[in-house]
Length: 295
Picture 1 (cartoon, rainbow, N blue to C red):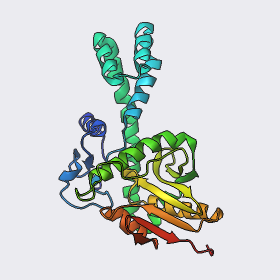
Picture 2: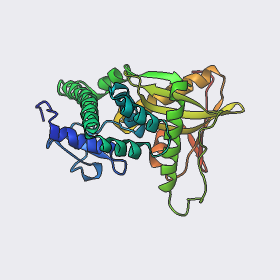
Picture 3: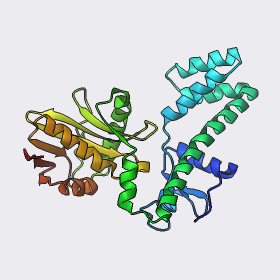
Picture 4: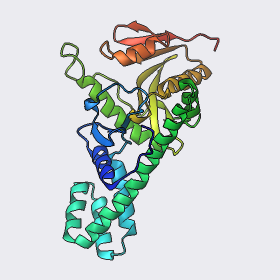
């Protein structure tokens, strides 16, 4: 497909639905200009030139739009009532929508405001895809493209402004991995080491300061234990995890660490290949690697 993607009202509605759906993962088929469940893809598309992962959208993002809308309201009564709902901590989304239904004029303002905000967000995402597709069409090597994109990322050690988001993602990802275990490996209790107060982490940030990936670890004697490494779906394929691990090794060498362990299980094929490629050796359900003094 060589024509520019036009964000029509119909396509915008489909993308918003796919972004907000919490039960299934969707992608945009840029040839047919429709949003489909990712499992319905007709072919493999490792470079995402046909099937484009939808931009990440979490309840926190939806809450932020609601907050900005409330601040923009000129109606003092509904501004106060809506603000009270946002800070109630219980049933926020449902109560917010129920209150708007009492006042159709305010409800229309909300839908108009939300659609405008999401259109800008989605258009920016599409523009990024257009730039990516243009670079591919110019025949640039994949490695050069990855390096160019990675150069726009920022890698930070223990940034506090991402701690809460990383903690939530860590819990969700590890719970999903445990659910995928075969019955004979499932222990019936928490298997993985969750992020705790003494955990450290390195993050990857996009040019607009959004979290794109992280690696979590903790110190144990003269070694370090990696408990999770994760890249958000829309940033996979850009070697973010590779760079995160590289940054971790740099940090640990500075601190005189002599060994790295990885919490893992035999069923995690992707992580297993990732770490064995880095020189780790399997030891039952963990991986370990001795660090050379010469870096």
